[in-house]
Length: 168
Image (cartoon, rainbow, N blue to C red; front, side):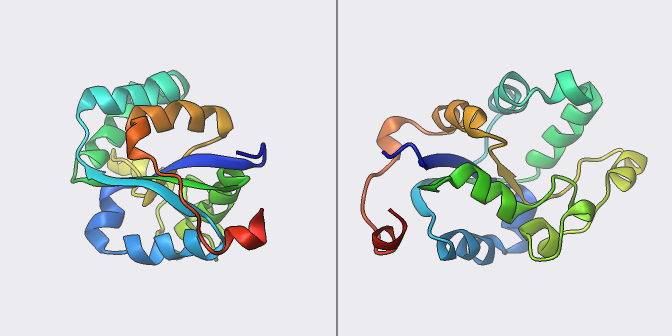
């Protein structure tokens, strides 16, 4: 893989799955030339989410146990769809397409800006997690830890797609 070709993890959260907007959101990633190299629907347990959100993402360390528990409650509302996307500078590209973590702050045209609206203030006042549709690796370092946490090597596929002719 070229040093500009990256892999990143995305997780369609229960709110995206239950609202039936996974396909519409996924289309945005495919349209910019990202390739799906792994996908599955799962309902992870608390231990899996602890490793993802604290050992890798450090939610408790940065935002506290209460925030972590709110996120965990939200993530346990149903199954999620996890995917690994590959493409030119994929991590930054996906973050740009997804928008700010807080839906209220996400610009129109981003996934969160177009499909969700919730503020941290509302979530804090209601003592609940923020339904923001999708997780995307924060940076390349996180992606390199998150992908093997969610996928084994034999669940990731190497194949060619037509648009690679134009992006590589």
